Length: 192
Image (cartoon, rainbow, N blue to C red; front, side, top):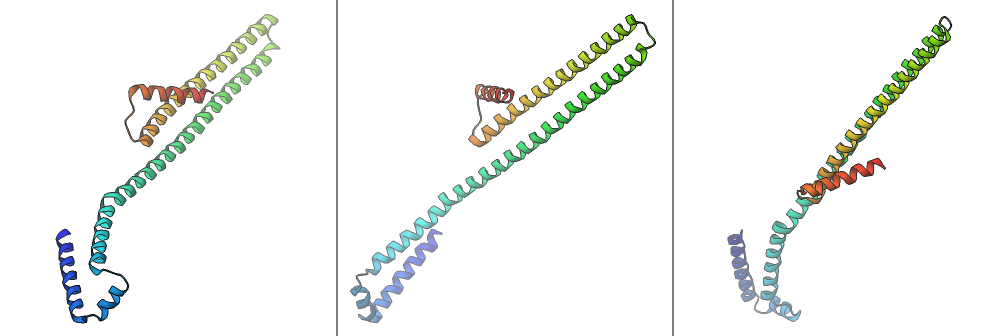
């Protein structure tokens, strides 16, 4: 590149010198009358071209690459957010299904207890009601435990995704302490 640029400069200087000698004052007088020094103009054009190629190679390309990388990371983060939303919706649906199933079981047991109550003595009816209550309580506890377990898993996953996204956005690897702190803050934010 530099050798071809040097050859072009040499050739241009020779052409300008020949044109100056041929015109014997016609064009040269007009240029000189305008206050233009062709040697200074030629050197400034060469400096401009050199500066243009250096900036293009060492400044503009890396900046454009950096912007493209950042745009890609943002797109990946948005895809992760959509994935988390989908998982959260699935978890919520699972929780609803468990509660509906527990309610159906409880209603079936209550209906059975009511049907049996007519044929049983008062003591047997009371015992059946206790069993139904215990089953309802157990079903509610099971549903609550399952909901809490799923919420904890979701919080942990969100914490990991926050740490991953933060490290990608910052562009450096986070320390173990930073990761733990970010996960804790994300989990506490989800609890609220």
